Length: 195
Image (tube, rainbow, N blue to C red; front, side, top):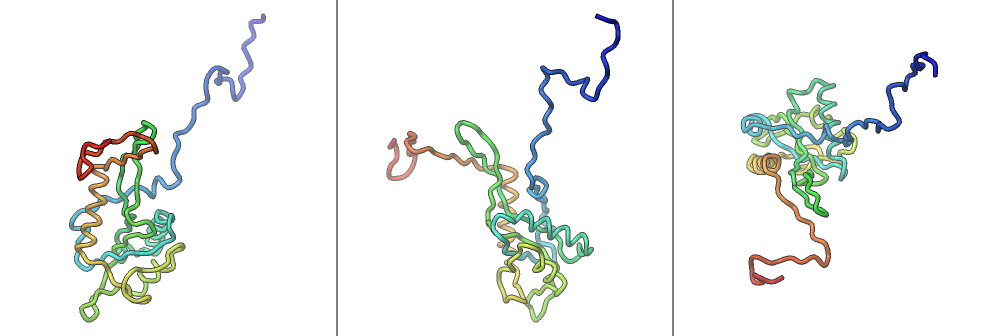
């Protein structure tokens, strides 16, 4: 053997016994799944109403991201305030593995808080806000009212939905999936103590 140092290459630091380090896996929509934490003042702000927007099923997070990007690009933050995909966390136990999953409360729908004006006692959104939402890809339209003049949901309904979303984040509900043939015990009702 000679005393010459081994040549240095781009892979000199990699040893054959070492496993290559893998980057942590991220879902494509991880950023879109992060929900805004809204305060009571933001939920019930005067002059703003919540509207349900109908989207292609499975594209709610893409629509949310697209609306937020359009609002940012058009500098319309004073017209469209919040975009929420109503979800709740569930603890799913499958094959003995415990994991937290997000479940959409209303698949195919997104809640949007928009600045409104009163016209004859009826809350209305302006044409710019209407076009901003309606022209977003994968949006089918607003729920309620007419095609050109959507109506918001009641403040009490919005409050219930957004509180449920908040509770789902704070305290996930357990969801147990049973396999066919698995033994279960009934604890309540007319079949109490049955296996």
